[in-house]
Image (cartoon, rainbow, N blue to C red; front, side, top):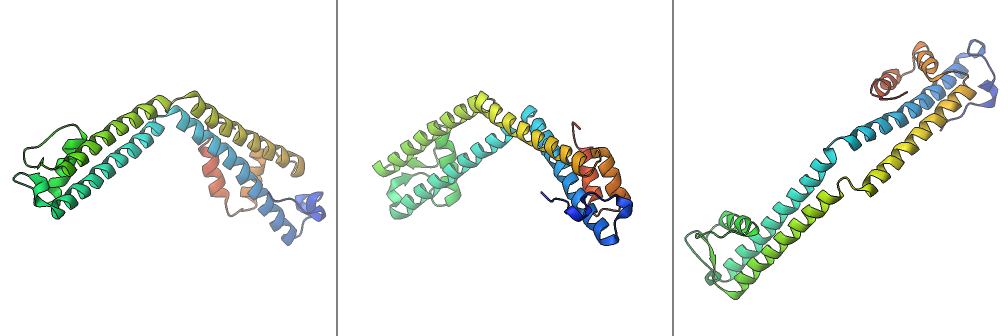
Length: 210
């Protein structure tokens, strides 16, 4: 966090030369952005806490893991077929996509007549994929149970409170060092043509508080 030099700390704005005024404006602008940024992040986290975006995030991760598992076992089965054609029988054992389709059905506890495992190694791979399917179901269950768990809520609430406190401390500093309220500080930055005033207004307009 930037601080005001002692040489300009007690000067009135009208008493500053151009260099001092520019430095004072930049310091004030940076401090206001820090204040608005803390409240902005706190506000966004509160919205996130109340929304279902975390559910979407968990589900996307689960689906990613599901498809990675399917393609992993597709490659294993296809590799086994290339090593020994007798490992599988059926009308569509020649293409990799056929084994993707076979693996997709296996993970959902289904079989297809186009590809049938015939050797012990092929059966072992099928059993392993079914075990992985149960693991994915377990992960899904645990995620759903933990989505709105007390631990998750408390941790997020702690971050929100810390950001809010930080914002309050910065605001107090603006009042003590610059002798301005936060709204007056924003007006002053705009009057002095601070380069980041649009960003400050963006943060301020997207707050649910302050």
